[in-house]
Length: 40
Image 1 (cartoon, helix red, strand yellow):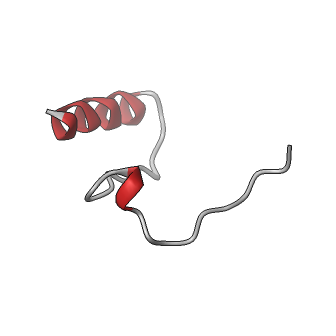
Image 2 (cartoon, one colour):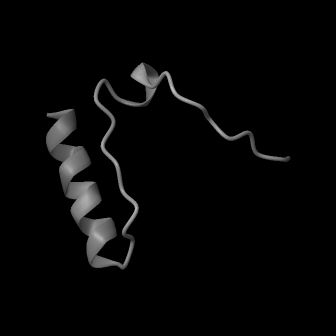
């Protein structure tokens, strides 16, 4: 069910002009790549 929600969200973003969209296999918690740190 989470994957279906991700797909719906990605489609909504695409309709609103976003082009650089990714659905992460395993979700955000499963991401092992680099993450940019934000300045507070």
